Length: 186
Picture 1 (cartoon, one colour):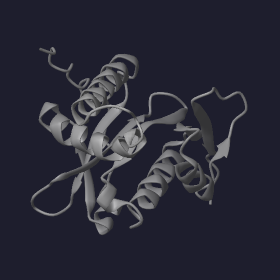
Picture 2 (tube, rainbow, N blue to C red):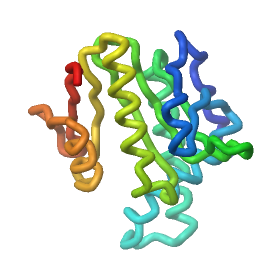
Picture 3 (spheres, rainbow, N blue to C red):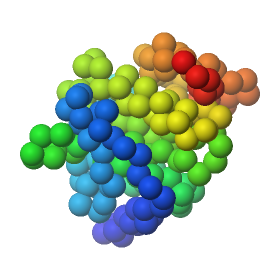
């Protein structure tokens, strides 16, 4: 039996006004323990395509994805205790969890630690709205920029971020590329 996941760190600082996101049908709220099953489901939906050719049983794939989510969560809460851990939820009454945004605003250069949307939202402008909202908030707060990492095996995400003004920084590793958007008045 696995031990329970560690809680999200306590909220720090003032949340960013998410009103501009409501037009896209989403809002942000602080993530909590009750959100973990939905976040795990979204993680599984996103990652299952990577396991299509793995010579594992469905049960083995499920265990792998469970462990991957668990390890990622433990790492994020331990190594990014100053980050904002948001659940992306429907702006409708049901408030269904549609994704996650983990954003570290504790340094001059903000860091998107993790951004994941339910597959049903892809291609509908929600990701673009989220990134532009983060960029605008960073600019208003006087941040120097926003950085993130994207997997080298995810060219769609790389192209998406590049369209939104991110550039690759030299010195990446064999798994991820680091991208940076530099804050400059538009």
